Image 1 (cartoon, rainbow, N blue to C red):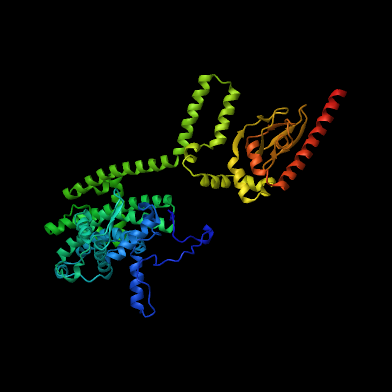
Image 2: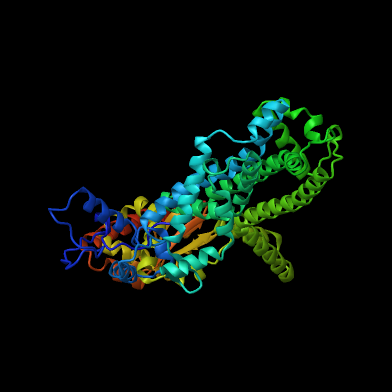
Length: 558
């Protein structure tokens, strides 16, 4: 989502603010020449922690720039060290934590499961020695330190209350809100950097297993990813696709780790791993990490999809329990993915569904009115061209727009028409916007009579797309007019002049009608354009009359 408003507009917006401000937008003390590097860095950092209009969340919670500036000023005056959740620092921090959480959600369960079982490969004497300590692992330690820093960051960051549209910045309320949430306990237990103060290897294994609690941060990951995508301008559809793929793989990955972890939990509790365990029967301890992971991933996928493998039947009760849980979760997960897919499909096809519902109503209407077949086909052809198989209520949408916005939309919609019609190209921008405002779109089907000769002319037409034929009153075809042409101007230029020709649609035509009153308002001040129209009208009248005379003479001779 792009920012809805800015205090300073770009040059393309047409406004350069020249009002002198008595204080800066950040409301921080002005920089001094005597300030050193540390003072400058401190001021820049403080500015980045204030609410920013460039953060998309600011425009969701606050309706005006004045409100944002007021929030920023109050933050500076309070001299609080709390980081505003809608600041640019927080926005970039969430981008960073998106990457970190993805790594954590994949690394911690894999580290807890596959790294622990490596000790079973050693002989008994060596294993007894290894029970006392575990070697220092820099990457694991770094991940846990980052998680601990994130806990501290949460205590120093305000949080929004969506229902009340306010932001809580009081430290005591922030701490209470975080500690009483489900995230605090899981964050603490999964972020303990154990190698420095825990020497017993069994305890280390238990602490590593607590990394599975990080799964509760999955909604936080998707929240951060969505916010980061808004700032980076990534399409929401792309985010949804990536989100669904990521959810699916995380589920498979976590169950693969859990299936391998269960026999190790038994060893931790009872000091043994049964020979009947599927891990032992599959000789997994003898394989390298990648081979173990693929086998476990394959088994987890089978359980999730409720596929039973005869070669790996389980007899140990713990493994039976985890298979039952996986089967149940798999059924729920498949149902969830199916509903999610159908929801996405229906959202994308909602306009098409509405269109076919409308067509069903139209068919029922035609059947009830006993319309002839050729009329039914024309009606269906009209709806197909008008809505292009996507039904929407244009009047309901446009009724909420301001006149200025309507004018800009009309000008954009008619841009192709303006470019193709030479007459409109000679109009100044202000007159062009006025003309476009008065234009009324109409659709004519093949063989529809657009203008009938001899009738009173009260409008002219601009042909946006399609082809029309010009016929004399006696039935002689004069010419064809195509995209960008205009017709019907003769009766407007010559007073009390009736229509001089028949205009018939050869194919489906989209035309824009300009009535007499609007014509006078738009063209009366442009004498050069009126002269051009008069010349074209006189020329067309002469040509039509010539063809009419020739055709009548030939008819009388016959």
